[in-house]
Length: 177
Image (tube, rainbow, N blue to C red; front, side, top):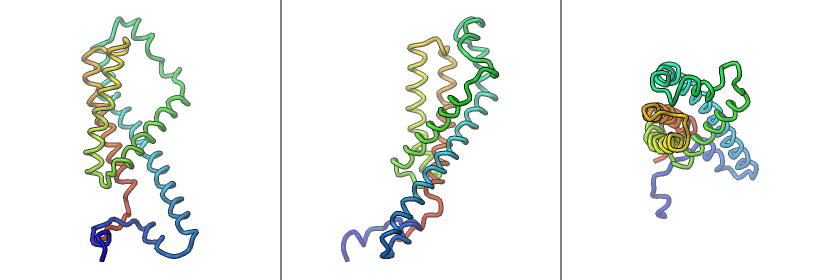
């Protein structure tokens, strides 16, 4: 018995199916993996959008009003009114963030909701600390209190979305000891 066969390994249902000799079966497994990745990215995009919208509606909206980055006129110029939002650009933002989170979870090797939470917390905190600190340092988009409150809320949304992505990418996997 070689060292490789002695080690515990994780096999997917797709990988077990690929043990047959048909040359077309690896292509099918690859297609299933791609389909799973795309479905996960789309669902993660929606979840992340909903979590961020909830964070804004329940916490940030009033907090931003209480801690504005400038005068009321200035703040009004920074943000589009709801009827002037550019829907396609918001969709692109949501989709690319879902793809980013799903890609990071795949690359991190997170296999469960809990390991996704751990990896997502690290990535979310670092990502949003960088983005919000950069915006605060180089623009008039945030007051310091707003940046400090937005960072953990955005990181929390990304953390939960990452946990979901890790779970969804690996659901239905068969563990072989």
